[in-house]
Image (tube, rainbow, N blue to C red; front, side, top):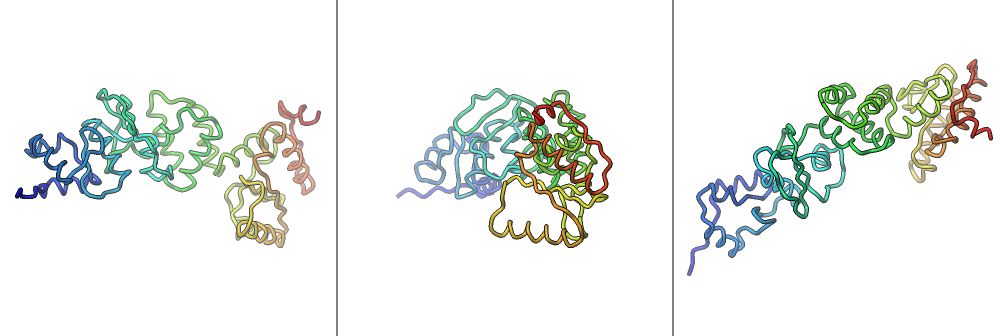
Length: 309
């Protein structure tokens, strides 16, 4: 009867540190022969995750795949893009494909993508830094998507506009560099979503309206998206046309609290801040502000003639 083989304690500890995965090179480095590895496979002590990578025990399946990407990529490998974004908490769902930056040439395989590029990494498993990851994720996105990504990481206090601008300044190449700087400036003054930035740019700035104070406590209780404090008017930007359930009652209670101290609340959505609709919204907001003491005037933009027509 054969004696059951076991992994050396140091290999078990290494596998535990790597979320349950080991590479063939690591096994060979500990003195195991190919014959012994074959025996481990036959006895079920390890199983193959992908050629050259073995799974030991029951670690996190996704983290194990992330570690596998690093082991496949070699010494220069760093996890990046959506993979790093998930590790940093910027992306909620585990990406199906593990992305690895490496200086070595590798053929992509199902579940892993290798990009030949130099990246600096940190953490375990090694991933691009938060600011670097965010800027990498911005490449190829449109203006609203950029605003959403940047507003989310800044409003959640994972990083700051200053840190992102510093990272941006240190990059030789970055798509949409000027637009990124503009958006970071808008987010820094309180446009904490793509919708809020559209209101700031398309409604306020394009039509010469007063610039509201953003993310301030109006009426000393509730935080407002945009507060024209001199005129007692609030603009709340809701991504959903109508809230339901508890959210709707919270909106109602907040509006009622504001009304008690003389504040008028305007609720606006995506349909109010895009194209010629932004012009109509600007006219409405401007007229409300003028009814409360703003001298104006409302300035026409390039789309205003379409709104009038």
